[in-house]
Length: 376
Image (cartoon, rainbow, N blue to C red):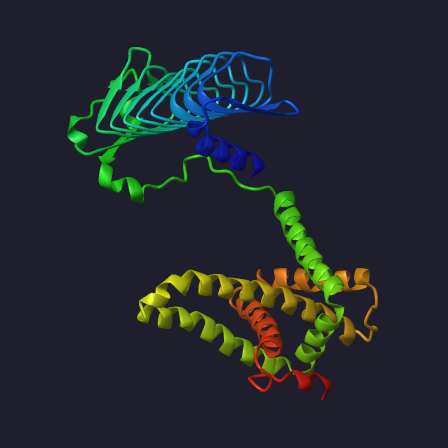
């Protein structure tokens, strides 16, 4: 994410800078300017944005390029991501290549190739190829499957497709695929209108590993616990009052949360009726989103505390203990998402519980759930 933000910043600021901007972090190089040429020193990942961009030296990692005219002459060991008017990747690519432009020319790509443009020329591909353009020329061999979405397709003398070849064209009758490219049994030619309804199950799609799913879930639990811990550290008395009120009257808190959420969501429609109030609609949407997030966080914390007290344990005094209860509630709430239908309503109830409790301390005294009821 950080690298993408830096590249976007370079892309926005590069055209207005007369000089070249250069930033090096460890072995990664970030460069922006009018006319750029990279010919060393060795780098791991390369990020360049400008009018004319030339990569003349090898890149040990991946190359991220944006500009008007781009040429990759050196070999890239990793992946290539390029967007511009004219993109030419002449050097060998050790990983995948993703390119977008009016004119795109690619050389040897060891991995998968994804290209969108108007005039496209494709060299050898070690994986699958997904090509979307107007005029497509296939000059090399494709080791995997190939999907071509184009009006005019030309095959060079060395063009071959080892896997299945699927072509989407405006006039399928005009498309001719030589037997030297792929036998008729592995060729499918369809109307271009069918492209959106195609079955992409044959294409390689990334699937996260089990440890990535579990790790992401646990990270989310920790983040939720840290947010509650920071709020408790800043306003311990307020959080204590919220907790006591929610535990004392959970049903009324959920009902209050439902009314408040309905009012926030419905206010957007009312603002649209006033025309002038349409400018405030984004603000109300942001307020609603913040309220839902805060309600879910508080509801998870109240769930953890409620389970802890129901087990006959005393409420911990320190931040560490309350952080643990917040993580416990977030963990249980996260597991609830795995239960179809019932899990959704359970999490929705937790969110409404938190929103209703917070509303009791934000709205004027006496509206909806009253703050003084926590002690009753």
